[in-house]
Length: 328
Ligand code: DP6
Image (tube, rainbow, N blue to C red; front, side):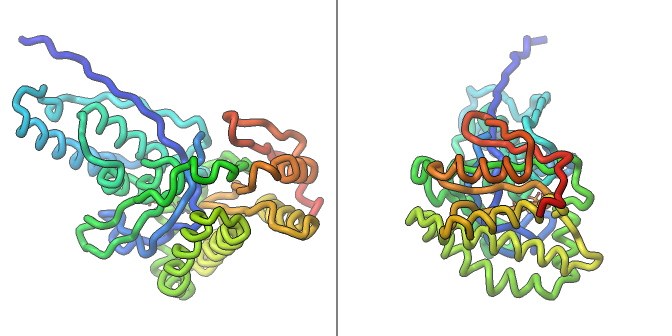
């Protein structure tokens, strides 16, 4: 029997916290969304087997095509693959762990298979693992264009601007709870699509305009507009969750205290220094400009937490566990 070589590839992918949220599928099998969405990547696991199977099916088909065109290539499409995936972040706690997990999976296998496809092409595969994963194939500012085609061929991620475009923009993650969320994003958004009257208004009338406004805010490095849309989108996303039957509550008292803290700080300063956003969980992500870091983290640290820890060099994590939210 001929010796089989061992090939390996590893990669990392960032989590991404959307400032215009994806919430709702028009096709659950292909993960086609009901609205476009947009996120900056935070530089900082795969889920059900069928989602992994969908990604592998597509990746193997691309490799097979490559092998057919280049007969001297090893037949990697026939090899078994052993995958090890780790998060350095709470999993399934509303902090984009599935986005980073599926993006890393697709990127690593594409590297292993030496696929020439662009990140935008690969994003169509990552999307089938987890919708938001398509945005994690890029760094910087990324839009997921919802597309129109029924086969999903135009539902993909595109770069709005590289990270270097706006290096002053930073994010602080307030880990309110690392516990697994009660309602998964997949189940939650399906329930919203089926039962919320507010949802159609959001998808049809609000998000398309907000996507344009957010793109312009990023292009112009206009923090005030960026912050206003980020907070409004987070609030509307949680409003459609509340408008779902039965209602979905992702935020808790500490999350709401963080909102009040940021609103209070902005009022106190007489300008917008911080913007909050929450995904499908209670943990807050605060966007701010580097020049305001001390102000934002100092204020939050003083009011909300006993400890403000520098995290991953670039991002800060404010530990809020056990915080007495009666302060607000
Ligand atoms: C609130 O991408 O986790 O974070 O496609 O079902 O895997 P599936 O959902 P997922 O949903 C993310 C929802 C969100 C908003 C966002 O990231 O845009």
